[in-house]
Length: 119
Image (cartoon, rainbow, N blue to C red; front, top):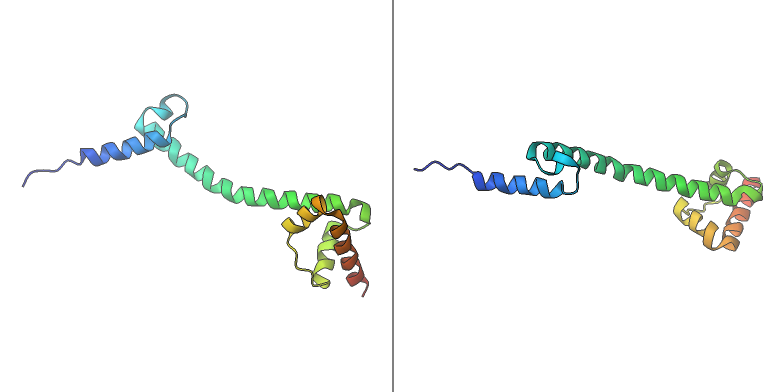
């Protein structure tokens, strides 16, 4: 039985990695070993970045809600607590969008939350 060397499979893998490394600087886009290292590291950063983006967006929503509450004599942490007491189950994304695009409805929610706090 003849020996099989597997050169076509190796070439296919190398081409795939070099394609992923397209646009990288210097040998990182031309040499397989350097390109493979760069692609693996880029994948790790990409994975971590997807988690980081979720955190950043949530922080943005919180800042927007906090800014909308500035003139209403209520702090963000107390507002979230009062929402729970009032059984208002709107998430931070929705509250943030309301604060920007529908301030009257947001004001009504703030008043409901304040009323629940006093009871």
